[in-house]
Length: 156
Image (tube, rainbow, N blue to C red; front, side, top):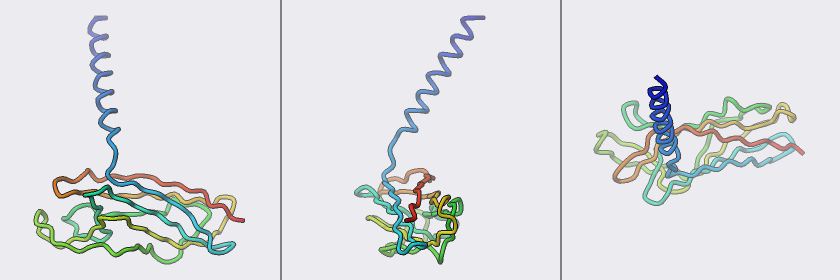
């Protein structure tokens, strides 16, 4: 009986380690967040994505039966009110994808997303961004990923 428990424990440990090792694979896209105050009560959230050479991320507006679009959800942010919609630069490249047999958009180089905001509570002002994206190369695509980016807003 004790041998069986030890064997189960050993197998569980090995499986846990292998799952942890797989989770450590790095993403082909690096993300960065910053906040720039444009006045005493207003500012801009700046999120930058940089795909590795040979990789691209999907555009934000894609057909439902295509790859996962890039999404940025700022609804969990506190102490701020968002103004307008997210803007991005440069515009994504349009192309025809044979696999999905549809026209898609993507960014293959550095892209910057900007969102204006107004501070409503300086003591609680923080950006909490949930970013969803899918990266592809000419040969493969990564699984859709979700990451969280947080940045405290310092009001002077």
